Image 1 (cartoon, rainbow, N blue to C red):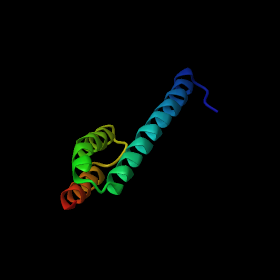
Image 2 (cartoon, one colour):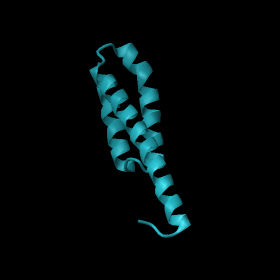
Image 3 (spheres, rainbow, N blue to C red):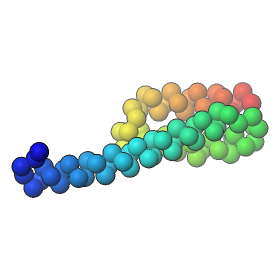
Length: 83
């Protein structure tokens, strides 16, 4: 167990951040799944900017890697274009 006040605070803050990151990541993954399941082109085109924004926010906060974000956005854009 930690001996210093600052180390105890770091443990508490890390746990809070972990839970927030986990929530954001899971929410984004669910949005991606919903977008991939869409068959209506208009509906998918409307949802794409929101999903891309979510992915960008994850990459900005280093929850996912920048290249993974780029790959996801690319594949989702191709999917929407093919509808």
